[in-house]
Image 1: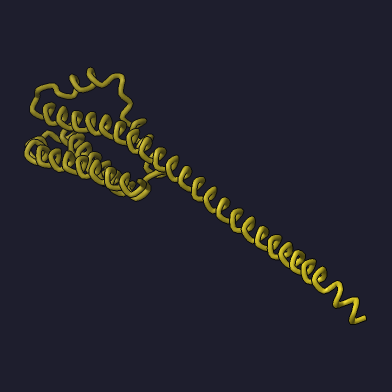
Image 2: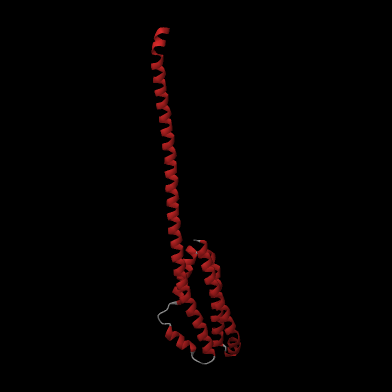
Length: 186
């Protein structure tokens, strides 16, 4: 038996070497394939998350632009209305001119669209917008009081310019807040 082993030892050693080499190559290939698969999956996930981020950013930016456009239009007409109310208290027939120039504009519809878009995309700005709407409502209520009680006209004429200026400042602050909120979504 020893002679057989002695005669075949080199063949057995070479076969064992080939077999162990094949096993090592197979294990190495399997490990490399597994690592490549993980790397590709990670790269694919990163690519998808980047695309999702870009789409989300574009959506928020386009909605911010839409809100800004609607808000500018709404605030322009609201400020124009309050200035017309002030003119009307001065007997300059401001409200008649105002209603003639805003026949095509539905201020309430604009306000509702702004509320809706803010609630969906920029909910942190809803209280700021409500503050502006409340300030506008207070001005309108004060104007209505002048229609029913002419004694309040003088106080309205004194206070309205400052309140309109304050409302205009709130509108400017809202636009800045919208820009800052948009920046956080980038």
